[in-house]
Length: 384
Image (cartoon, rainbow, N blue to C red; front, side, top):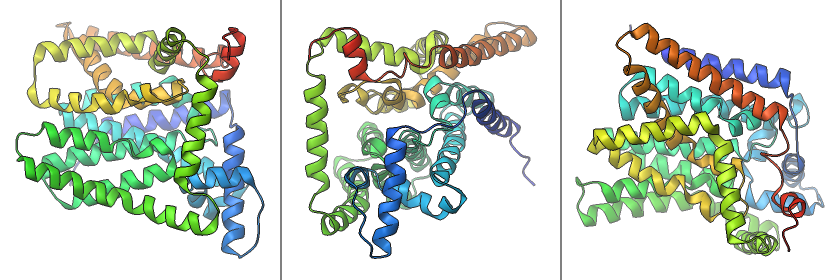
């Protein structure tokens, strides 16, 4: 009988404890989008019963992000928004689990996998979204991480069925939120960087993945077009256009600074120091297999630069890459000392400081890291 993975159990236990602590300190909150998701669930329930339900906000969220309201319906008897809250908790714990498994696949080190899961689970955006009814952030994080994991497993086992499953997961992630299927970028990058496939085989694999990816999106597009006078494409173009018009008053320099601020908040100073240290060690080690995976993660991880409204929750798509490199930095820091006890104590101190700092950053300054882009423009008197 296989022994239970004590490091994985410890990682999930820490994540569960974190959920309790976040609940006790910060509580459960909802925002404008949370209420719109709940309203969308009501719209879906009325539609199933053949009843009319007039709600412009439900329509907009329903077209863009139907999966969360749909999955929440079986739990709504527990209370308003209960289904969304349950989803958030499940996605959070599963994301921590997958970060552990991804790190284990890439580095074959369970201790490092534990470090990676801690860096991810206690990052400031994860703390903020752990018990929020607004699951349109943690949901796509999960779907993207799940797709990354399936891609890595595919390249290890070469089971073609995983391509179909992976494409479906990516497509469903897009129905959770527009950025929930961005891990398709990682799959394509891994295929293109692989030396084991010829050009024709690479093209066929990408087409196979993309075809399955489109199935849930096209299905929902057809359904929503039959139910409403709008199409997903029309609303998406309108929203993106509106966001770009709102943000065009910001100077390029200011936008760069805002991206830097958002990125800094995602992991904090200590977290980024570990990430840069891990990246430096990877550069020196020159492990070709790991370098290929990390290179494939880069375009996916920095796609947030194309997003019109930078904030830590958007930037946190870099979380997987950050956890991998940060954990590698930690494990190498531990190896510096010949005395294993000293190395372990140092790592525990660093992790403790990382967790405490992130809690404090959220607790004492809740508004600044997550301030609305427009409010910040107004505060700094940036012209519209």
